[in-house]
Image (tube, rainbow, N blue to C red):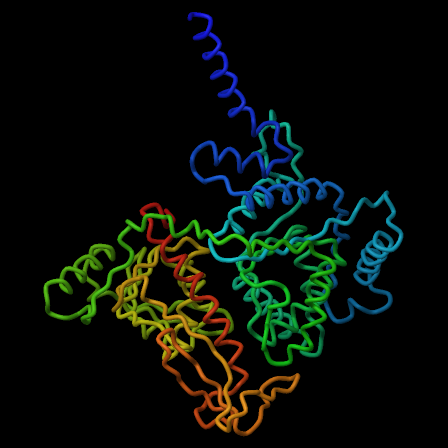
Length: 497
């Protein structure tokens, strides 16, 4: 009996030791970090996430062979690309090195690290795993790495950024360059700047909805590869679905081909579990009433009181402030204090605002309150697009977003699909490669979840062109991500100190 008990005790001890030791003997730092979170009960083990962690481990190991970025030259003008320019020579050496590695597989250069493009549904862990990988890459002056850690940590410069913010940065750099060199080509200079600032670029929510961005990305990414920059991106879209239906998409297709040939494309489309929805939204960040928030009934008065408590007092009597945005614009904030700004939905979503405006608002305030939020469907396409962008920016910056809406959260976004139908019985829409052109009788229809249809005229009779059909489809696609993020953002721990 005693012997049996001793054997059981020894077995339990071995199992416990195995559980504790497992992360230490994992194949790489990302898997180790993931297993620690699993053992701590912070996440549930998911086969797709385990597989993705292993791929990140492989990329982490390959970063050790990443060639250095050529030394930056101070000559950043149009003349930098003349035949005698040191910058041209440096970039030529980088291109030659890239060519030799690709064509002759010279082992002295090491295998070229391939970027990663990870796509799949919302809430399946794409960004979570990318962040674990990003944390495992140590910058040259970072001493946070434990000396007893058995894993080799790559030491390179790095940058992790939401795609909205990255494109805002790129457009600002273009603007600054063009101020000095109106006839110059800004993209090669910007590629060099980005390479010097970060050898590893991690993008969250990679998306292309604008023809200008599409053309910039096509050239920029090719140049970044020449400068030995490794790119990791997460997206809800597969490469073939990027900018689908957009204007002049045929000009963007070479970028998609380049992406598929030079990146490891990792699909998590088989993962259907949205882990964000398991978050208990108990942080009192979403209120709703089918009456106006400023109405006289008791429930509305109670909701108004809760909003004022979050705000930190009544919203009246505060002095307005102008938030300065790049390119000489400002956003007016009428109700604010040191940490919080209070808006009506119309102030932020009926006005022609975008990611840049929301980014600077989130930089200024820890908490944003928005009331009178309507149910968002095909009747509110532009407003819904801005609202989704605001949610993305708040999520990335961990800004608390408090909403007072007219419907419950699970009814806030009404699913719809954009399609094209013909009023003459012919259901085929004729669209040229450049987009926007169609047969005279074709009419774009927006159909809501309830089956209601709203007409967009291909001839412009309703003031909307077929070029916006792609944007409408992207908006419908992003509704699920926005709803998922609002659930996670409703937790008590959400926000920044």
